[in-house]
Length: 553
Image 1 (spheres, rainbow, N blue to C red):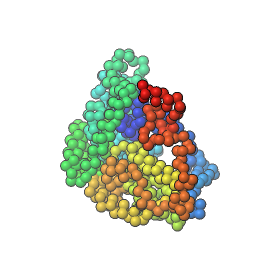
Image 2 (cartoon, one colour; image 1 turned 60 degrees about the vertical axis):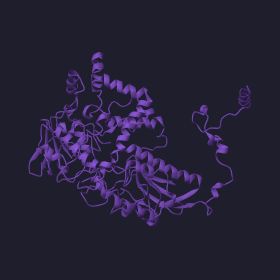
Image 3 (tube, one colour; image 1 turned 180 degrees about the vertical axis):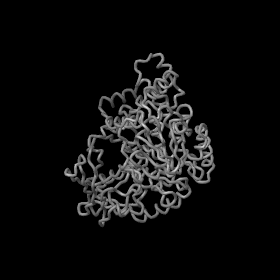
């Protein structure tokens, strides 16, 4: 997980799980990880999960109509196991293969070198001269995180602020290399957070100073405690708050459309917000604020505290590229050498979509070869020549549409629909028809040039290129995606069953619920006493007699 990674805590979370867990409006990586672990434990999602298993290959076995996989356990090349299954699901997404930047001499640096996606928390940054390479979403989050004096502290008392800043380890100097411009969108939806879009009041003082006077603590954090108390104990208020945030996110697609009034307004608003935070170093506006592409061309990042950090004396901003790295530091494209103790690479991932391992479907087709010039699939879910193979958040998924969690949930429900059909109707294989794939490709290629994602910027939405190539994005809004995946379009699939007769699954003429204890009259509604569960009630003679007796009375 990216160091300093954030998401808006209230929006994607389940009320049963998150009430009282989150301490921030935009949660950091440890809190997000804790949330996922809590969900996994609460719903027993890990009971069939094998950790420390690396997939090293997958092959479709046409004779058995199954997938065979090879896995390496505990990173031991001598410990290889095999398994088979009816369905293969790739839920790794795109940002799963982090890469070092291709800079001459990178390996020669003598100090610690960290990558944002492979963070080494044992490296102590206190008092160090630190360089941050990259100004994408990860770099934007890292800079203020390791420079805590730029944290928004106007919501705290002066004493609490001073104690927090004294307690937190700080780098002695930070040099950040900014090659590409980007939009910082902290002001968007700021009415749901703190002042100017800042986080809810953090609880740093509670973590570092438990001995402080309780009244002082209450005065400093009263609003925060009240907010979290509501989220914890008032499910309807919490649900309304979450729905407000989601509705705001779902209304933003219009500013992605080129030439729209909403796009123009978003650009003016974001530029004004950014300029106001760069007032102490106005020359940075020309370095940071885009002029030739719209908000959304690159992944928008709230970046609380980032612009403020760039304006402090402890930070040197180096515009442009990097020429080389040597034992002591970094030489920029202008020939200036910057000596540093630690280098942090916020330089992203391999976004080519090609698997790292052989993934072989029908006719011996390897997905690494099939996708060497760009991925081809159907609705971002299935792939021709690869039967019973799903991707969740694969190519052309809605990556630029807000929180990813509701999207993964819709993918999962779509996959479950298909697997239920396999079980109930005795389906053996399914595979998208090539004609359906071609029509999907034609539609998205016609639609996506109308959007900001196709603009004049370098973005992993376009596999890291500036202009050329397909935009790896869903051709529509977030709600458009939800609606499209609500039901499987089986007419777009070639399906085989266990028998030549497709209705073999009708079997002995009985419905399954006639044997498994579900309600035999569910179609006219469930009783309140059932608690919403589809279970057959106990229709005793006594209960029926009591009803008739009361009716006659």
